[in-house]
Image (tube, rainbow, N blue to C red; front, side, top):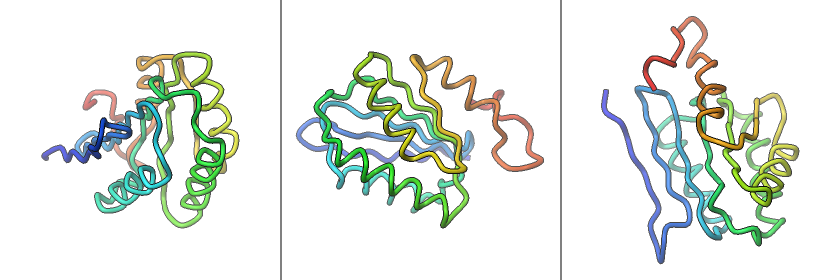
Length: 146
């Protein structure tokens, strides 16, 4: 099966992502500053790819610390609301530095419902955690495919 890749480019990449159907994984990289419209494009791409139930690894280690708290709260609310409408996968957030870690924990606290959301300092820890989940009930572990 082929891997689908979707990205948003502009005057510098604020938010880019790839969606892997074989691995049932969405990778997201956030850099600098991004706006609500960027997040809505990401969610639309996930919906179009029918990837809501996929595991998600979101790297915010390159975000600026000046991200507006209203954007963060709005996105957390949307994530929590989407959980009530569809099957959703776990989210691993790679934060890295202390500033990004504060943002990630604030987001996780506001977005967490039934969905599992964890914050990590590095990619290997996030991947190990995500690989402990099954794509669908009864499927083999995904660890060997990612």
